Length: 70
Picture 1: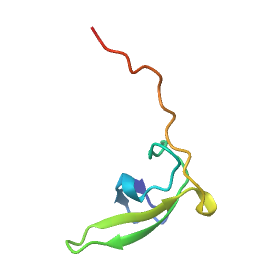
Picture 2: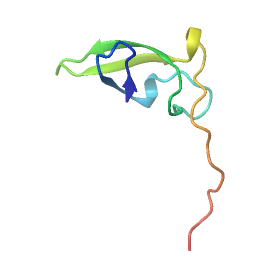
Picture 3: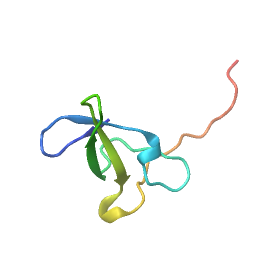
């Protein structure tokens, strides 16, 4: 979810709407720009999510690992 600066609450964002290189994630407190559309069911959704000035988002830093627990 994204928090709107205008105080109108949070909006849902699907990863497919995020402009990023590689893995599409958002970092906590990352500044982004987006448009809001109201879906047929009345819920608000963020689309065209970019970094500042339309650039790529930075995204969350991925942790290493990938090993198997055991």
